[in-house]
Amino acid sequence: MAVRLCGVGDNVVDRYLHLDCMFPGGNALNVAVFARRAGAEAGYIGIIGDDVSGTVVRKALIAEKVEITRLRVNESFNAFSQIGIDRDGNRYFIGSTPPPYRLRLDREDLAYVASYDVVHTGDYGQVEGQLAELSAAARLSFDFGSKLADYAEPLLPHIRIATFSGSGLDDAGVLALIRWAQARGPDTVIVTRGAAGSTIAVGEAIHHEPAVPVTVTDSLGAGDAYTATAVVALGEGASLPEAAHRAAAAAGEVCTRLGAFGHGAPMAPLPVIATTD
Image (cartoon, rainbow, N blue to C red; front, top):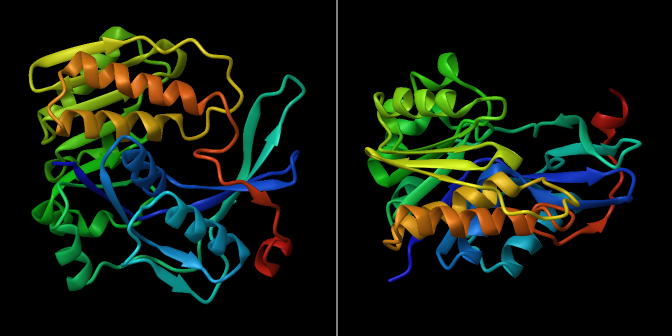
């Protein structure tokens, strides 16, 4: 039986200024899409704008066969980020504009989430205040990005699967982070370090996986692909090394193309609120 995973929280359109196009993305949305690609049944709860960008996000979810029964459409612009490219071809974030709305899960949302095995959100999901309710409904996965102790500590007791960006940490630092997090709640901890590889711990078991060598076109979304694929593989009963290997392969594939998971569209005009900043 397929693993069922629901992403809850953020979505965005990533605007690639040098290409005059945009791609759907956002941690919670990306994880739902990549979980579906990894073989899971996937759903997504979030809010999109009623503009062109929101339509791009919605159409991508439909094309990827992600369930959107609980998707909201707000009369406003969709969240977006601006991405540039430097002289060496490296992409960088110029800035981001959050949506003029905030997700609040209701009883129907929580009942819907309870039909899934795993619910995933993260530090941009805006649902930190409802983690206890989400955790009571399904096994809770949370991506902390590079936010560590002060932000993570009060949230960890609700979380079963925690993902951290460990760029800059050495092996000892990764192990210390894993054991620190596990002591506060999660049984499974994932630490990604880009080209330095990744580490997954499930209970006392721990495995380091090297990054897959690829020619990097765009690394945006690679960490989300890793998390989604690892969570699905472990949910299917894969061994720790096999789950990490599958996750690294998925992350490597993302790096070879533009956008988190494709579905590029011509650049839409900026909303009025953004052009006046």
